[in-house]
Image (cartoon, rainbow, N blue to C red; front, side, top):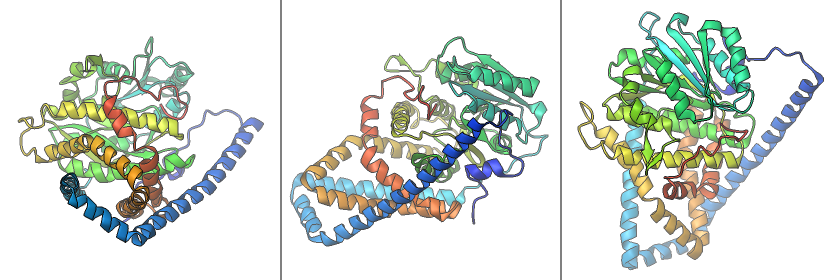
Length: 485
């Protein structure tokens, strides 16, 4: 059964959702921009076809090479078993494979059991404060605020707060324009200096009056029913402390990297977070769209704003940190597949790897924090699921350097064996992502899962080991880049 969610193009053209404009008259310059945009999209499409074909050729060549070099692979396995170190490594590899396959099958079982909570009626909806932190977003913040204003949510129950975190561009101007249009529905604030997203959110939490806080990134667009769907779990589950929205890519027609990330995001959210939600333990509520109960936020707000790592203030990973602290309080953290938000992602390699480094560092920090409570009696009821998720993530972190050393050994000693087996592995493993995306959306875009896996394996493999060894470093990294906030 196909999903009822939508792509960015459908989002802007569907009934009930409009494309936001600044009402400026059309000029020759605007016409020229449209021509440039059209040509760019055409080049991107042509390049995309070439990349997809190249990906298939590489994987087929890898599979054929494995078949042709079967004798060499057999000899490699014999040599490895004959040595004590090689035999021990083989046992470890088999254990890791068994563990990962078992976790995957368990997640698959949980995914099939998952169903998003249906939205409740107006009378049951809690009051909501929507906080939109912004830094150097220019007119994009206007689009975000306008999409929120069109939400199918009772106006008398929704407060919108936009916080300009000391932007150096015209973000404040567009906030003011939104204020003129929305009037009392919107309250805007300007930080005297740039202090980081965490401090902008902190101000919103302190000033907000809602029973539920919703945070939305200023480069994101929400669907008409997103807010209603996002906060409904707080009504049906009294122990719900936070809810994660379903993040999709807004700019997936502009460049190759967003096309690949769009497929990756679907796997990360609609598969993984669906499974985590069945365990009441979604590990990260995304900054693009998330909801938090007032009680849960104020139960950890001061610890959150004053959080440090190795003696330095934490200025990254505010979403993962908040989620972690809410889980620690014993609250449930859920995922709503029907709460869709479209967000901009990096379009160039520089922005992408910096974003991943930031996420990787946050992941290391929060796993260390999670280890301090996850094996204690932090929650009523079963804690097995939370602990399994923690162990799975921790094992990946622990094995980062052993696997890196083994990969480098293969590249140096057996380059052809490494290359062919890696490409065959990508073909096998990524086929599930292809099938999953094709089932949920469409077949043609699903093949980007193959290209993304090849791209990540050969050009972003260094992110995890680098993030691990530099986990103490501060900095947002991507602030100031035009392609990502």
